[in-house]
Image (cartoon, rainbow, N blue to C red):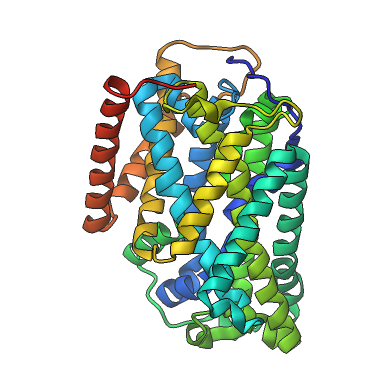
Length: 433
């Protein structure tokens, strides 16, 4: 096992679960039911089950390698340890710029749009920029000050976003009508497969919580337990939300594309219910951003620690708070800059493909560790030999093969450019302290 690099281990099982669930459950779940219902109708549950099984297989691979490589960096560290610095550099760039910063920009603007329902001033550009500065500045400040404060924010956001969702699931049974659950829509295997591709992207995020692996207590037990609990909780919650919303709204669910859950709550509790859900959506988006600001700087820190990135200052740890403060400040600044520019919808498409490439790299890392004969007694191992890792590779390749040609082309160009940058860094720019 690779040992910790000096950061404080303060995250327990439920801290990891809160961190993971907070990132997985973003703004998407508040509009997801209508997208699934209009495609599959009563076949919706199958799409959730398929996506849940795929993510469970992938997360089992994360759990195995996460108990062997327990330093900060999560997927980056797993891939860099297995395949070397070039693979690590590609992963760090894909993770930060492909999967994180662009998504952060979109979510931040989505949060500002949501707040504009209550405060019209948020439609003004200078107000939005000021809001982004305060938000990213505050999150950066708390993350520099210490992990406990950051995890406390994550736990609060997780509870705040879960309240309206659980409200719908628990009380929705009293308003459900079995007759309304029947929606005229095709349930063919092709429809289920295509919808599963969309849904799969709503399940990503659990792995991001492992970026703080170097700060997780007893990682050999905490990581497998925390990750598996997170995925199972999300799968069950998503299915219950889908069934509740679909049965309460019936065929009219397709008429509420922007806020199906708010409309569901409105049927249940009137305007107050809709307001609670909208507030919950705001907390959900803020929670996603706060989770990214907590976890993603650890990628910059780890890449600089390994001399994969040329700026060694990113690997500095605060002498008092024991946090990677330079990486936190840099990432928070990037979040602010990209959010303030605003127009990133076309680039956010790369986020989904980026996650899939990272998943592929992690699963291949598990296989490489197995082939190398690396065995540690007492550590978690995925059952079934190579069956689950191999099935995960095939599933990821299948998903990637169904991505739009334009997105695949953009990802290929991104990787080529990143590779060229690596050559410049390796042979032209010296690594600086």
